Amino acid sequence: MSLTKDFPRADLSHLPTPLELLKNVSAEFGARVWIKRDDCTGLAFGGNKSRQLEFYIGQALQQGADTLLTTGAVQSNHVRMTVAAARKMNLEVEVQLEHRVDREQPEYHHSGNPYLVKLMGAKIHYYPVGEDEAGADQALEDRAAELAREGHKAYVIPLSNAHTPYGALGYVDGAEELMGQLREMQIEPASFIVPTGSASTHCGFLLGVRACGSKAPVHGVCVRRDSSSQQQRVSTKLQAVIETIGLPIEIPDSDIICDDSMLAPGYGLPGSATIAAIRYLARTEGILLDPTYSGKAFAVLLEMLKRGDFKAEDQVVFLHTGGAASLFAYPELVENE
Image (tube, rainbow, N blue to C red; front, side, top):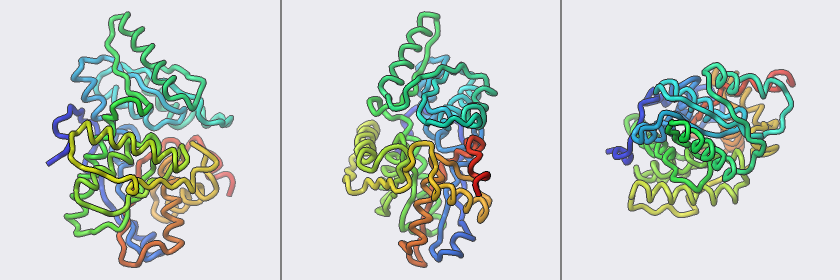
């Protein structure tokens, strides 16, 4: 029985997404490495955000909203998929792009996600600060008030931890889906590897896995904050999700793993190990990772495999959160070989 069945939900994703064995990677390192293909959710290049948006937009429709508002970085996968979801559900949409990443390359500002946002016709606003979640959310609320005076009803999809994280319900559900696939295939996972940024995917996934009875580590890979800051963020959001669902479960802080070993040089900036990991999976399995989330997460997994952290019989599951659209914003991935 789904833990999220009582919440309003829009139908946006191709589910269930595949669970595949990375045969060539597994043959090279010995452990059996599986990939949960949430890059295949089907909404405008796919990605993990569609699971989250199903719950936000379900609530927006229930409230009678006619416009969606959200915020994110210039190459935000969330922004791109919010626009696509709005178009699918016949809603108006306005997005706010924040100055989070110092990159002067024209590709970063004009190709990939912002190109698709313009193609789908969203109204774009700009926010000059990159590390001001409360301010970015307030700017959305101010715009919602303006729209209300014009006779519209806007629904704000927020950024900060100060709001009920309905999007995390998508990964409570996603973890339940994955655990069902693993049971059907008689796979007992030794570890899960997931990116952790806003923390909605991480905390929802951890809660879903634990609610299904698995004690396997959920190894979160930091993409925006250091490990200490991210652990606190995940803990706060996790408790909010538990309270939102009303689930009688306790998850200790020791279960919240946040690894910042691939964070440098910062959010949206891939280091050499991340670039190498993106190239490796593209050329070994024909699977495309992104420089901000999935690339950094796979870089950590690759280091774990190289160190011999897993035994030959171990089953390791990597959550691929998508983001391939942003590859076009990073020409150095192929230019600097």
